[in-house]
Image (cartoon, rainbow, N blue to C red; front, side, top):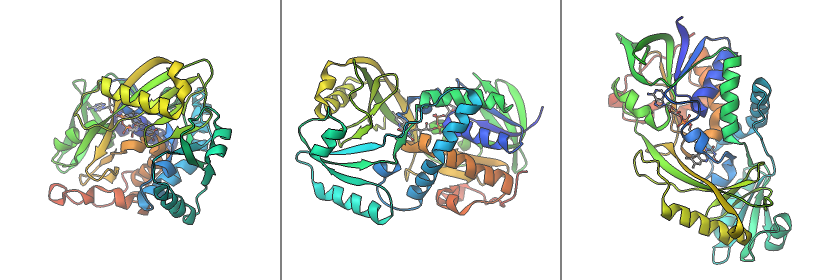
Length: 380
Ligand SMILES: Cc1cc2nc3c(=O)[nH]c(=O)nc-3n(C[C@H](O)[C@H](O)[C@H](O)COP(=O)(O)OP(=O)(O)OC[C@H]3O[C@@H](n4cnc5c(N)ncnc54)[C@H](O)[C@@H]3O)c2cc1C
């Protein structure tokens, strides 16, 4: 049966968009060449950390903050729909200042966020160690961010997959979309697994593979893979309560007792290996922050490919070709940005206009000679 919308890519972005559209009453299919979340979305660390990650104020930071404010409800809703607890945790994040690091940089960061009205607290080394007793003696201070939380993203992807089936989204897994079907200047569907599948609109949410599909219809959006590697350790006790960051690496405690150590950012094409150098650097950083991790066992290592763009910002909304939309390039923040992306793309599809918050992330900022202007019209 013809769908209202086909979403290409079953990562956190594609699945969250599909959920929002199905809940608005549309007939939706997700086509995923592997299984839901099999790429970056399962490889992530699940931090919801706009304040820790932010280089400065601006529309992207605002977008991240809005998504963070939606997360508790988003997680509760998906948990309820699926029956799978996505393990939303709200202990906050602690950013360490280590010996030899310049405290003035941290003070600048604390002051612009304080001026922006955000919650964060400069704490002494002693107070940091009271909160997290396993911390190294070489901490000279820290910043506590109470509202930067986390979710267990593997469980989130399992839950999203189940939730989508419960709201009658057709999940087509193990099938690759090879091409888009054009009728004159409009997209009317996709070809996948040798079959033609028609839809009122197609949304490309294929992570760092999105550019390849868009190229085939003459759209130039450079989405490149940025590899990130993670090492997971397990010991007798978890050792940390909150997420702990430093300039060396970050540590994310999970409910099952694992501590994730992340991550690298490497531009090595589509290679997903785990390298000796990265494991070495991540372990050294983690043990410098929490010396007792030395006795923990390595239980798993993995890597994933973040979808990055030339300006490191997402690209979302109308594509320039009628009935074809894009939602990708979420780079380091795709887990965090899932709820706001879902809400804004629903506004575009149903309302037929680009919400103000999406304008800085539109296709138009890329080479306009490759993109035809598209009227802003509702697809439904
Ligand atoms: C190590 C690491 C740590 C991270 N930590 C965090 C974090 O703490 N917090 C955070 O917010 N973000 C984090 N991220 C970033 C986050 O994982 C990504 O931004 C997010 O997962 C991107 O989601 P996506 O759905 O766009 O892409 P993906 O999850 O890559 O999904 C795209 C999907 O499209 C499918 N696909 C591709 N081409 C086709 C095709 N032709 N036909 C059908 N299907 C296709 C793929 O199989 C894939 O499943 C991290 C990433 C990594 C790698």
